[in-house]
Image 1: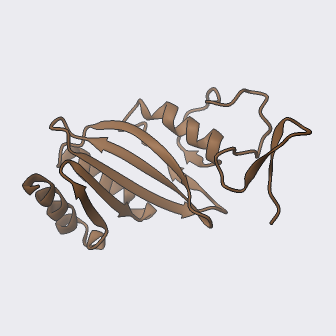
Image 2 (image 1 turned 90 degrees about the vertical axis):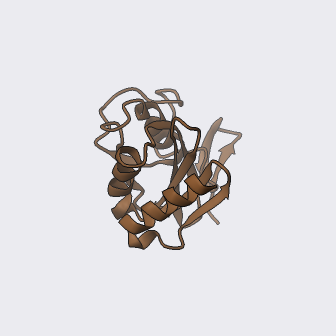
Length: 159
């Protein structure tokens, strides 16, 4: 795990705020929790200085009062860095990464449709994966969403 230690130490040296927020799960698997305000700088450093040039996928997370996005990055040697960014559920705004990873377009559309994120800078386009007639404001991967059997559509649960 020498390479993973070097990557972690390099990130912490560049971004002091990451101290204690990077975990090496096992060889070739790393996790970092990054503030939304630092994300662009951390992503740029990881890609351009540490070789994380592949965006494998993005994963949306419902964390209760917050929503999160995991950016699964990889280097050509197989080391993966999973960067988690958390934003308030009431205003789930993130910036697009399509300027760095053009293929992120489809992943960003998915978290818009399924979680209700707003992705600043995402070019207008088609919905994915939900159909064009899917009701606005209905996000089926949020924990508070449930299927309304009488309408054949989802509703947000009132607790």
